[in-house]
Image (cartoon, rainbow, N blue to C red; front, side, top):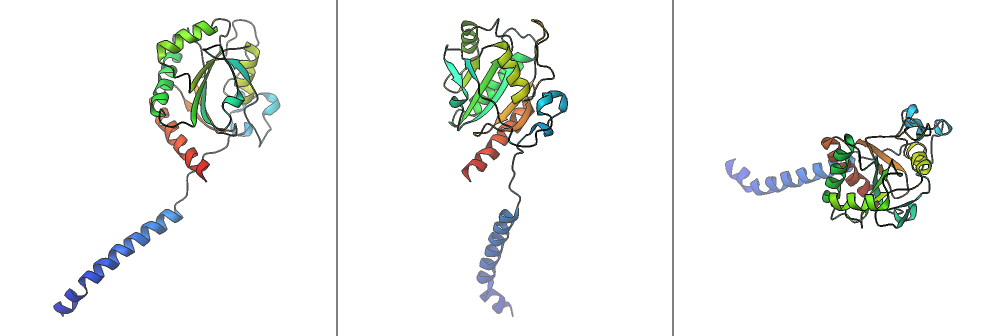
Length: 224
């Protein structure tokens, strides 16, 4: 009897290995593939959504835009078409959350250095202060890679409208006077079609890892 089992020991070992491989393949085939949501106005807290958009359930995309970056160049949605990008809103003189947010953007820039189809976009919310030279000085101080990351300024009304009506990240339109300033800690993940795929707290280190993980999920989606 022992000789019988010894005779088939190698065969049994091979069958065990094959069985394990088959089980793993079946598991991977049946395992749900993670997919990021496509955010619509009805999916976002109503106070962050312009009244005209609060009942929109599909087809929401970031509106066309044209701003000036830290190099004095015009940046439009065409510069981000076909790219995944992370957007935020900041101002260079902010003493509270902005320095942390910018440091986290720098972290993303470093982590994504070898991922050419991902860009960053930061909008100033004090365009009357953050002129092109001011943004350039700030960019140099922070080590901004201007081939991947634009710090943009422009007309206040256009920036604020984009924040509320496109990115859906602020509670007011900021049109209550010169001292009515919008501000948000949100980082927004946008896909190559201009659709919002995620919101992240730009002041939290843990949220940056979640954002990087979600970028990888989005990359896998694009490959398909």
